[in-house]
Length: 137
Image (cartoon, rainbow, N blue to C red; front, side, top):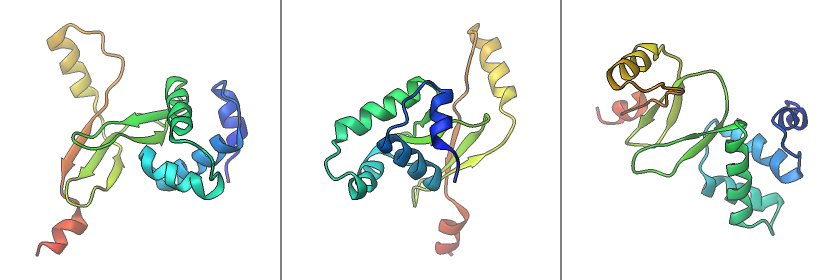
C-alpha cells in the first residue's frame, strides 16, 4: 500500500481518514465516478455526505492530486494524476482505460492552427472494447 499521507502532503492537502480511503478506492478502480466513490465510502463512513465527497474531490482536482476525466454523455471519472496519457472509452460496457500514446502531434497542430498557447491535452477515444466486440460475434 502506498503512503497516501505523504502523497497528500506533497499537494498541501490534509490527510483525513476520508481522503485516505478515497485515494485507495480511486487507485484500486483506476477511474471512478463520484456516485460509485460515495457508495463505497458509506461502507466505512456511513454519515459522510455527498457534498463532502464533492468538496474533497474538487479540492484534490484543484491541487493537481486528481485528474478529472470527462467523457461525453457520461459522468466524469477521476484518477490519480500521473504521466500524460489518453483514454479509451467503451460505448458498450463503459470501461475506461489508459493508453500511453504520443499526443504531441495533436497538441502542436492545435496550437499552430489556433494560435493558443496550449497547456494541457485531454484526449478520450470512444469505441467498442475487445470484450464487447467478441460478444457481438
